[in-house]
Image 1 (cartoon, helix red, strand yellow):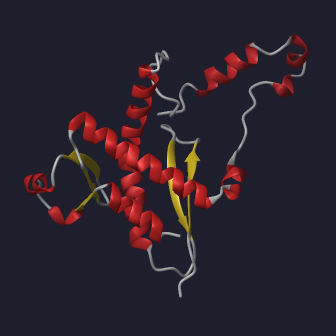
Image 2 (cartoon, rainbow, N blue to C red):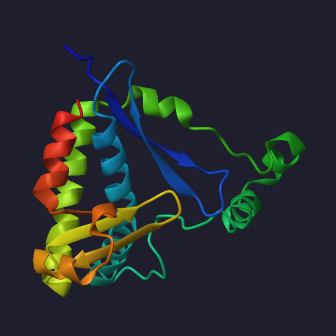
Length: 185
């Protein structure tokens, strides 16, 4: 029997734009294709998660121009400087305390994977439900090749026939992603 791999995401804050790296960590396992597919589909749903978050904030009358998800790191320095301006003069007397940032990589080793997978299932269902309500789209099509990453929400599987090179496309609905998530642990 193959050992159980571990799924997690690590944010690449040093990249511009900031983006997640989805990791399916294990050795001597067989589900590499499942891992690659999950990563591609999570990457494809990322903009929709951002839009969903913004719509929820607006419905709650919370003023926002964007969600809490950072699209790039260009504003991080400004945010840190603004936070530093709010600190007291006593704290500012020590120049070593200015513009602090921290590496949160140790947090990922303490995540309860059962809880994480449950939260990812809920998020997947919310994203697909929202796309169904908003655009009547039930399927997510992703093309990932060495040179391309494209995705498109589809209303039905018949729309797949409109695209060339079908062998490089994968089409899923929420239940597919959830079942892949279940076999990944």
